Length: 349
Image (cartoon, rainbow, N blue to C red; front, top):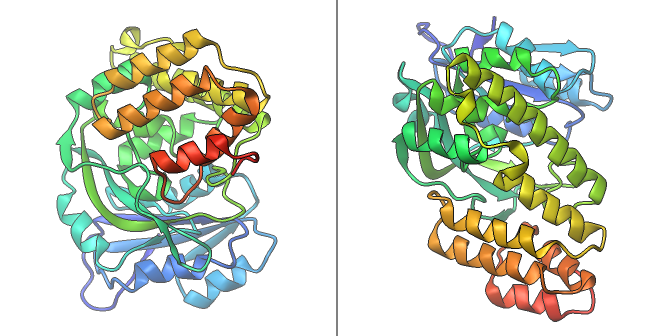
């Protein structure tokens, strides 16, 4: 069982923090200290080393936190191992290259109650040396909701949600990870099943940090290759199929839009076309524009920007589209002027 992280009279743990680690020797101590420094008696922490081949295990042991070392089997299995060694009713899976901000737990924990299925909070993007790259992408709004989010999921298979480290899940939701043997990660079907099982609490304040560096599996900050985009499309379909099975048990599966008509699938298919130098079909671009304006959780400026992006993607030659895509997926600040500069430049940025 995870050991509570401060001295004094024991308190029932309200939140478990599981830190899976694979070859993040350079960052894992910072992740652990970002939790320990908050000195909470109602938090338990467990670190699971997923068969690292660098010095991660020694770094983890140096912190004195409860830790386990398992054969390499992917983040999902490492998280499940940590889940089985904690008891709190809510769980945060904190990636070993990310961190919580000081005082974040004091804001998160009071907002957790039995009706909450998931709490999410925004993450500041930082670089390898903790330098701030940008504010949160995606930006989040403050709300507590289930019905509107459920409608979004039925239509698009998703709603605006942060990376893994910005999510707190109720334990029964985490149990559904055991069904996801098709996936190495945890930020899939359970994220989008949440509004069908309780409320989702969203916090716009950036309470944690998402680190962008050369080893991110997400590829953030890099123009994706066609093979990576194919992988993303395939993963989305498997996650959506899993979500459909969960919703079928709740009597809602028949209400879902087919995966290949959902926004993410259409968007990634367009990116794949651009990556291989193929002009996206105009019909796909126009369908995406319609989808953008149907999404209620997008701000007006985002709708305008995305509509312009998809329209230009249908019109520009391959080299210009690639430059435009590289600019859109970069991690720093973006602007209409920057996008235009990327389009007219001879080389993709």
